[in-house]
Image (cartoon, rainbow, N blue to C red; front, side, top):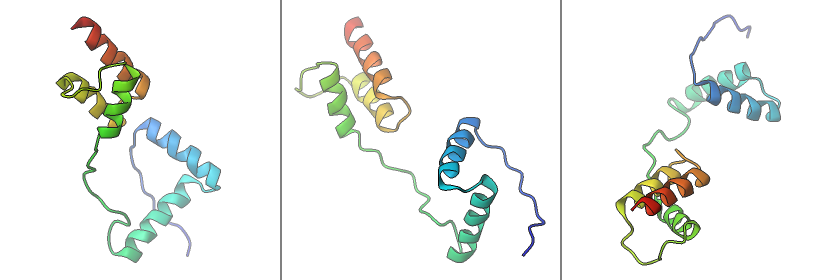
Length: 109
């Protein structure tokens, strides 16, 4: 079937670049990937993956952060440290930034 319709979308530039890099490794261009996605919507009669609010458990990341900043393993941890670990668990910041923020908090306390 010939392709005659257009889809124009705006996406975050970093997301586009990262996705295209992965697609290139797979040997698929963005247009083909979007076509595959739309066909899966038809086959599944809906979104072809779970659309949920992820529940991040930051226990592992909290322990990793506590060890990295040499904080006592005794709980309770300060709420600011828990918040930093939560951001790290959600991948909103990387470990280096989490360590920097946690050390800065500890040293200013």
